[in-house]
Image 1 (cartoon, rainbow, N blue to C red):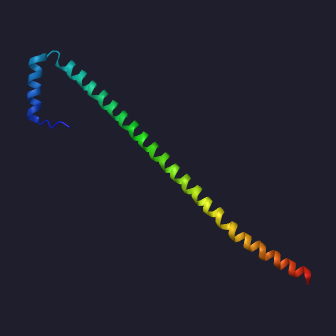
Image 2 (image 1 turned 45 degrees about the horizontal axis):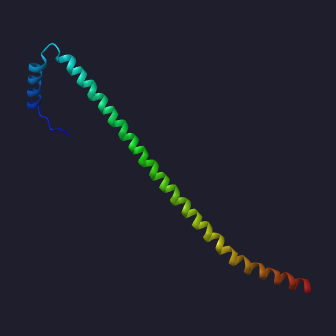
Image 3 (image 1 turned 90 degrees about the horizontal axis):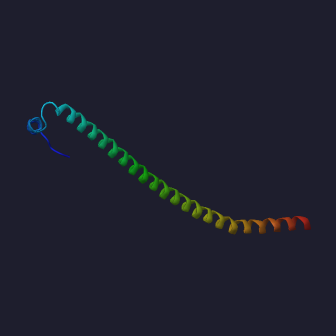
Length: 102
């Protein structure tokens, strides 16, 4: 994010010593470190929450797609055997009638 080199860190340190003073500098550095840590944890938690929401939406879309495919497949399967089964039933009835007459 920020491109801070070694020379920039030295300049920041010297300015901090001049402005804050050598007595309070460790306390300020500790405070800033804890704030940066909190900020990083907050950003990480927001990022993980966003990723979780995106994954949930993708899973819902996948579930809907699978449900639609299953419904369409079921309709196709149910439509095909009705035509075939009606021809099979009529041929078996004819064979039964012919056997009974003999």
